[in-house]
Length: 88
Image (cartoon, rainbow, N blue to C red; front, side, top):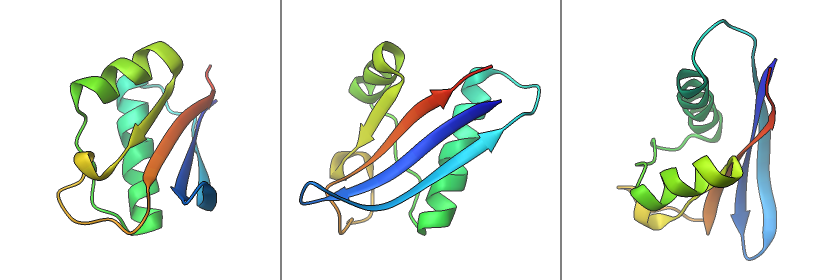
């Protein structure tokens, strides 16, 4: 089982969260992208852009924050955070 926890933060408060589970036989990268797509769909967000700093943070910590710099549209929260909480 592969699970990612998506969270929206505003003023140091957790506003929304969702856990996406994926038990398909696919690459880790595809699972992460699919989970991020599902999180964005559930939160009604446009898909964020993966900047080099975001990729590096995710590789080192299995966690990434998407701030206004990662989105084309304006966002009404501080950041979207995704974190791998279980890997098969």
